[in-house]
Length: 528
Image (cartoon, rainbow, N blue to C red):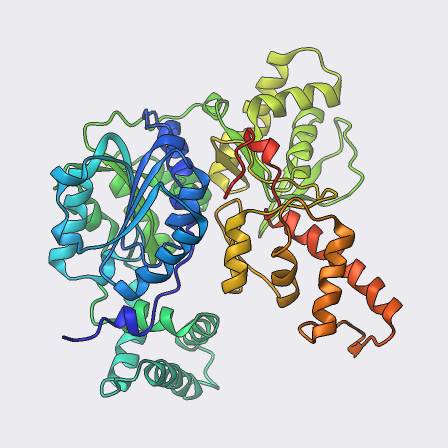
């Protein structure tokens, strides 16, 4: 029997933030559906690997039920061990083939996730994945199915073909990955002096691949099957199984007004959502998609109102360009989010955006934002302030611009370090095994060696002074070196002071990275 390539080189199993049931629930509600409450939902993941995505979700919703399916015993084994160590009883990772799923035996699921599988299996299994979604999805359920898409993959296909040609006779996975990168460098060297779009594209791909592990290169680019399609083709195949396109998991990518004005005006007149999305893919040269699907008979609300933002929680990573803003009516205030700059006018919109930015991506209920804005401005007219948030600041527009994030749940983490810092048990267990842990926003966070040593003791019972002592013990053992200006500190007092500063800094960073929790903030139900 031929060894499973996923057993030989396991694919790194990690969280996908946009696949969270809470987020799928949010998008479905935004577009007028009535999905099942995410905290008690049944969730199925097809191609779950080692459970890096599903296990944190089971921790987040202990009253839910989670089933992961994967063909690779080698991939499933570490996930099963982690489930046992955490003592989770609401999740199962099952070895099975997608084409052998028994709908009658499994029942219906409120949310189905299939990430990084559809493009990498043969035509029969691609069809079976969509059929399974149609058969297994609850009436108001949501399925998340990602895939490689054209036109972006038309360019990548050339690079894939070159790497496949060069590595055709190589069977050792590590050597194959090395030679694939060597081939790409060889082609780039041949264009070293060229100032062409082709050379620039090769350079960008080589830089991207250098950041990823061998498993990504082998399974995403060098698999025997890699089948990208145009969005309209995927949508047609989904429709054949009774499914409809609900939304893109990354909402800003489906918003027409994020394009340049001339194109936005033309596409905005197209009433067919699939055609409109296809033209946007042409403009953006999309190479990967994460569409959300629902049953075709669901009444999707496409015409959203600015007031539709009110039932949700809001967050932003945008930072103000000044620490001392002028909130007077006449002075604009700018916020930077990635490569976007938002300039806000008016006392109430500026105050609201300032309040939201100070939460540092920590979700805030719309009503709480409204109350905080009323309090900060001293305005005693809630409906007037509400109109300012919805129309002038236009929070819904900011959601689709990618400046504000939308959700349906209060935060599970705290920005305050506290006297006895606490992180999730999941993060502590993960840190003992690997460099990457899952935070309380369902994101992967890579830790330094010192952070891994520290996080192991963040159980909510250990005071900070003892945490510093814990680090000092590891310094004495030689597990950790304390240095300043590149030179190790030898004096005990100097080392202790440096460790105290290091501990404070690491804890502050962990707070910013959504790694610290307070059980009281989740109703006494501490995340595992």
